[in-house]
Amino acid sequence: MSTSTGASSGEAQAAVSTYSDTVRELRSPRRVTHTPLAALAPLRGALLASGVMLPLSLGVALGHAQYGVFAALGALPSGFAAMFGEGRKRPAAVALASVGMAVGAFVGALAAGSPLLLVLLAAIFAYAAGIVGAFSDRVAVAALQWPGALLIATATADGPREAAVRGVLVLAGGLGQAALVAVAIAIRGESVHSADGGSSPRSRRSPRAFAGHLVGTVRAHLGLSTEQGQHALRLAGTAAVAESAALLIGLPHPYWATLTAVLVLKTDHVLTVRRSLDRIGGTAVGVLLGLPLAALAHFGTAPLLLGAALAVALGYAVFAANYFLFSVFLTGFVVVLLDLLGETAGHTVGPRLLATLLGGVIALVASHVRPARSPQG
Image (tube, rainbow, N blue to C red; front, side, top):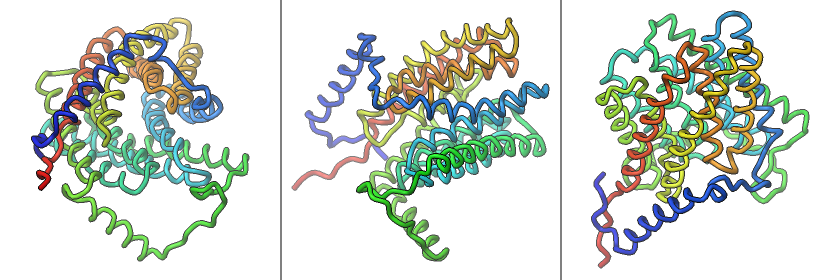
């Protein structure tokens, strides 16, 4: 890929306008925190938060907080996949996210001690997520959790046995979330709906036809011939650059930068700009929220877990309505998780902000990297 040299002056002005408009919004707290009530999902937030907090609370109660954190890290991203799709398609999306995350967690823990291998794996997992995202928005969200799990697992290096345990815990947390979503759907009696709102039977394909469909779709998006293929390559390059930059700078947790870059980079440039700035700003506010949440530990484990539950429930509830607020609540929850693992909140604030800023900036730059357009003749 090369930076597009065929962009018109109108396109350049549009990009500048995107930044200026977004920054202007950031100056107005009302516009930043504007949250359409119709997009809020408090009940879904409470349901998915329970899927995260159950394994976390169980691990803490049994004296193995780290196991609870690993399982919660499997359930947390898997819950995002439950927000897309209709009816019984949602548990399948959560399960898809869970399996890929378990593999990512296992591989990431094994490779944590090898910087070059980490850069390569980050690029491979990001590319896979980008290509698989061609199937549907639901699959795209599920697949995007794969490089996330890989990156988070690189925080600590483990041997094969410990890495396998971590992978199993991540899988258990994710599948537990899938089961919870399936039960909720069964209780509500939801059905699978077609795009026009009417119910429709599931399309059944033979295993051979289904495999052919998968291979054909992936093959169609390899290279630069499609927008999805371009995005997958851009995503892989961004992950490699972010991981390399964070390692060279010597950040305590390089994966924060790479994770931010991968999550905010979208096929659409305007959405990337907004997501990057919202993520950076939301993280800055979220680490401040995390400080009093982590301080609840002084009053006992129960208040700490209640504070964490409130943060993650609010994060899920506003996910589709306001990405800035989602980033605030998610960051606050992550600060609590790190505190449970022995990393005090005060020591993680600075590195987290720096890594998020680095990842966001790299994503913004990468969003401008487009194949040069052939001149119109």
